[in-house]
Length: 73
Image (tube, rainbow, N blue to C red; front, side, top):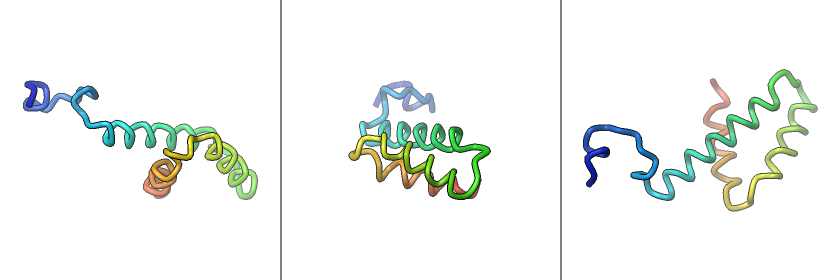
């Protein structure tokens, strides 16, 4: 275990690939929410689906989970 992990540093290089993928999915979810800000109803739904379709299929489930987790915020 490296010293940065022991002292509580948040060095991304010390994270596993899966942990980094979850962080990236959360970043994409935040970007989608930001781009849909101010839109309402069907327009917001359409734009969200359009942006989500641009996400690689391998990451889409993680992005959807991050969007759902942030829905109440």
